[in-house]
Structures are given as C-alpha cells and as structure tokens.
Length: 289
Image (cartoon, rainbow, N blue to C red; front, side):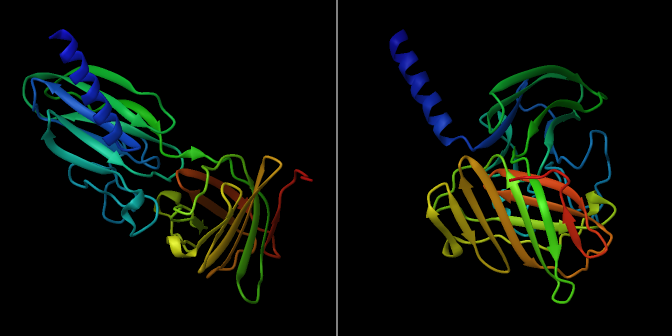
C-alpha cells in the first residue's frame, strides 16, 4: 500500500512539474483560504512604492491588476498573470516569458482578522532554485516582501557604437551580448526600444518591435537570427562571441542627449545608457577587436 502511495505521489509530482510554467510562484495559508494576497512587484517599483496611478505604465501584478502589461506594450506573451482564486488551496502568479531587466519582488499582504501561516513557494523560475518561505502574518501587519527573483537572464549588453543619420533619422547600433538563449525557428519576437525621457519609470518607448514566426530567419540554429521591419536586427555568434546589429527609424534626434537602449530576446534582456554627441554618435571608450 505504501509503495502504491509513493508511486502515485511521484506521478503527481511529475505531472505538476510538466505543467508548471517557466515562471511560477504560489501562496498557501494555514488555515486554508485565509485573507492573504500575492503580488509580483515590477523591477521599476521599489518596495513600499505606492504609486499605482493610471499614468504609471509599469503596474505590479496584484489583485486589482491581475495581468499588467509588462515588456512589449499591448502584447500579453511576456506578461505575468495572477490566479487570485484559491485553486487547490493556493493562489499563484505565472508567466511564460519575462523580459524586463532587473529583479521583481514577491510580496504578500494580509488583510484578514486574526492570523495565518503564509507559505510562499517558488515552484519554477528561470535563474532561481525552487524554494519555500513561511511567515505567520496577523491583522495589521505590514506587507511581507518575501524574496526578489530575476525577470530575465542578463545578456550583458555592451554597446560599442551608435550612429544616427541626421537627415533620415535612421539609427544603427552595434553591440556585444554575452548571453542569449538558443534561437530556433519558433523564436517569436525580438524587442529593441529607445527612451530619452528623464523619468525611466514613466518612459516613452519610441523604437520597438516584436516579430512573428513569418519574419524570423535562422540561418544556422543558435548562430544567426534575422528579424524584420519596422526595425531590423541580426545576431551572430562567432568564436563564442555574440554580436548584435540593430537598425531602425528614430522619430527623435539624439544630439547631445543621453539615450537608454533596451534589448530583449526570448527571456534574455539588456539595458544600457549611452550619451550621444553633437553629431548624434556614440563610441565606447574600450577598444574591441
């Protein structure tokens, strides 16, 4: 009988692992169904930030905003979503892909009376090991910031140079990237965005693109990927060094201005601030062969 129970448990564990999303965190309470709520705080919202106004683009994943628009605006493929109903005794936040740079915070708010033992389990998360946290929470307690988790793997973007044509506005960026996930024919999008606003948490992205399978071309799996308009990009891997060239039409002129550049591809992202000179050019101080 015990052997049968062990076999059933292992089978169920295997099914749960197979069904788990690439990103998944759960909240359970004792007693079950206690009035505790699970949040995923966006990297641009520091703990204790309460600025959730409608003008704020980056919302936390929370009961009032169960599927905030992270990553590519208007595309839900890289958004987290919250199941706020007690399903099988837990509340959960899941995602297929997260591409924003930095770490997001897992937070629990207890709004019930009395107290409850809250258990947060990171069941599956790229860049983090499965782990469980417990805390007894009582009425009136401050929110519990449980742990921070990486949104995406850091591709370590290193921009070598950038140049904008001051007549056409077309901008070209050359960079090195240390980490990207292997590309295949099912790689669905490439994202590059620019921003020169002063307040990055309220950034205005003017140069952004995500593709469909129809305009992704892989010359050799894991080595070269080409992406289509309105911006074009090519990624090459040669001698274990990954290089990137991105071209696109800029709506603003970047003369004597700082420029934030963000690149994301399939769960890897990079971000760098560069300073364009009077001729709308940037060149890294470090020399590369």
